Each structure stands twice: as structure tokens, then as C-alpha cells.
Length: 168
Image (tube, rainbow, N blue to C red; front, side):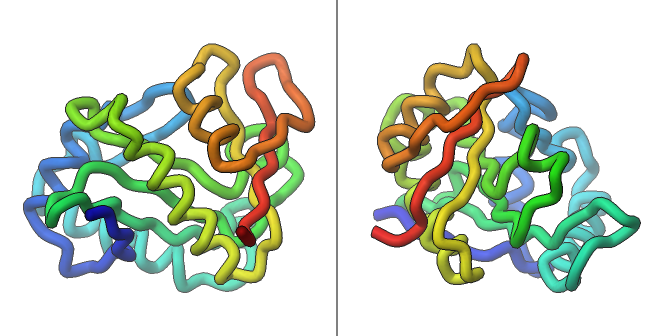
């Protein structure tokens, strides 16, 4: 059974281990927790939680973002973030939603389920559609976005721009 849980500053070793398994940077997804000590990870959680509570732009560019963990059968296997709104730069690279699945759980449909659940969260933030940007050579993520009803509306030199309705 899959469920989405919002990041908490109380998250522990199970999340930490999962984040160490997901590469630091892969196909445009940045995992800043990879390589941190456990103590640094606990501080990182505090910062990520604060990002979800902010209002408006911070430092002229950083938008509020809420991070979630995908749990399957009580074990964290992936994560994703929902940006509450977009800037012009995020419309080209970044989008509203980013997500990743731990390598040992890939190819089992969990990416599709994670994106489906993140789209529901985006809807709760008042979005009727969300942008997912996918590197041109990331066929798996492109397939996940399209399987969730995505529509490719554009392309940059590096990414597909895929809009997905948040309401089913």
C-alpha cells in the first residue's frame, strides 16, 4: 500500500537512509540530503520544513515548496516536492513538481503513483494544473508524466514542458 507523508522535522533514520540511496543529482532532480551526516540531515529537515511555511518569494527567487515522502508498506522509497507557484525561470526549468524513487524500487510503477499523489497535493494548494519539466533523455520520467495525463506543451534545449491537470 502506498501513501504520501509530509516532511516533518521529526523524520528519522528510515528517511535518511532512503535519501542516501537516491543520487545527489540525476536527470535534473537535486537531492541535497545525499552525503549529509545524520546531524546535518536533521538541520536540512528544519530548512525544508521552513520552505513549506514561507509566503511569497524569498531572496527574490525562491518559492515556497512542500516535500513529501512516498511510503510503500511502511517503508520510504521516494520523495517529491510541490512548488506552490511558479516564477518565469521555473516555467523553463523546474516546474511545480519534482520527484524521485530510490534506485532499488524503480521500474515497479512507484514513480507513477508518487506523481499521482503529488498532483493531488498540488490541487490542495489551489492549482488546477501543474508543470513537470523532464530532461529530454529521461524516458522513464516522461512516461510517468504522460501516464498521469500530462500534455507536452513545449520544449527547451534540455527539457520537455509537461502540464498535468491536478483534478481527476
